[in-house]
Length: 100
Image 1 (spheres, rainbow, N blue to C red):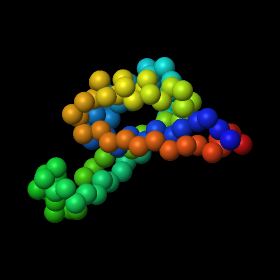
Image 2: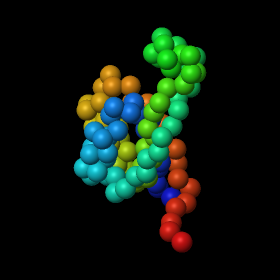
Image 3: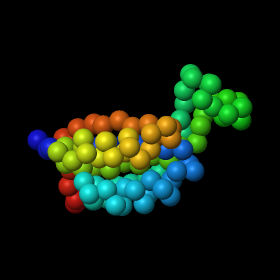
């Protein structure tokens, strides 16, 4: 069993470069991946008119694997630096990881 967790962040596109720099400097994160994503929600008040018509919002998804003991510090720093920015996150356990 692993003590690793996967931190996933969904980020507005205008924050992509800022988040890349932030993640590269985060002590508990040694690497991450990113990809274009679409967010879907029933809360249309948070969407622009174009997004409401399209039925989705553009987002960038970041996935970072880190040790569980670095998670709380990382989340606290994210909260401090990105409060009110529209970043959404979730955390899942990593059962196993490695390179082949």
